[in-house]
Length: 484
Image 1: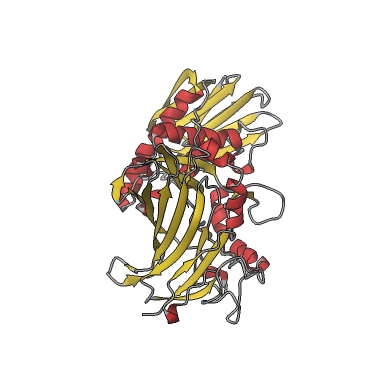
Image 2: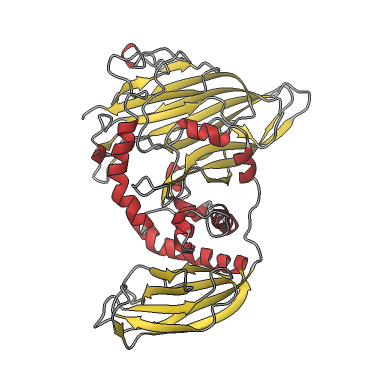
């Protein structure tokens, strides 16, 4: 229901958000922030607040502090168009190369764990095709995961509820997230689910008269003391309860080998066990018309939360790769280990789910399906992690390259900024390096026009490389593809 509400309000909510930001730095054709405007912090418009925000290009940092390394930086956006499946050109996004010359003034060599941040989700990370080079040679990297970068909001009614996600919508959100270093510190910590004792009920060996009832449903009903028992579920399609009576009913469409849904059906009980329960078949998910011929096998076992989350995370990975990879989607588990994934799931449960003191409405019903899915789909900062050694008195060139999605406004919003693509850059946010200079550059610009910026590019006069003011924390570039 929460996901459906999110989809239902996306256009209306986006329109309201855009309307509320009118005049807040969107600029106009005569604005000083247009192409050719000066670089630096000179009071220009901070750029458009887009309805879908892709996050900025961040600077390189290190796990270590006080490294004494200095850095010169050049960020290049390459706007060579891609193509659709039919071969026609598609001007969407840019290839970014963020290059650094790291210099060591010390008498001895310095080895650091370099960290390159990217704003994305685990689900979208494979699309970045990220690569790292050290002195022009390709190098491998691991990926550290920060937590969810956003917050929560109501589902379209200003009632203070927290049914929907509220991902970052401007660079200042990342500024607040990263400025004190705590976000990165948590990303470098190992997180694991606790060995809390639980009772697990697993449902298998399903049967139902599907030829007569194509939405045949199985429900399990029981009564608990809400103060003494907490129930988490996975693989169930419906849930009803009466908190006053402690009455609970969980239901699922009986697997028929046709629907693309999990056959892993589990209830996890913390605290006092549920005791007696009733299984009943129904004609559909409304659970109103009882039918015969619906059955399953229920297995009860006692284990730990860590053990059952390990089972569910592995099951979810298998299901994801079965259902998604056939459509050409690359698996995030190429980069995300099971230990990391389980840590992210536990992190959501502990921070926002039933293991937090104030669970968000979105997760208040204990459905682990959303938690496991959103651990992959939520916006966060991921860090490409790789070692770099800089010799005494010497320099090393380090570069990260990746495809960068733009910020944009939804076509259904009616915004005057539909068709614009926005790109942000931050100069020093979250970095331990001492910068001696930074440069921004554009290549392959024949198919774009610059609409707004505070960088200083002037395509008409061939100015495609500019020096940045290190005192300016944030730069922006907004382009529009040229027709044809």
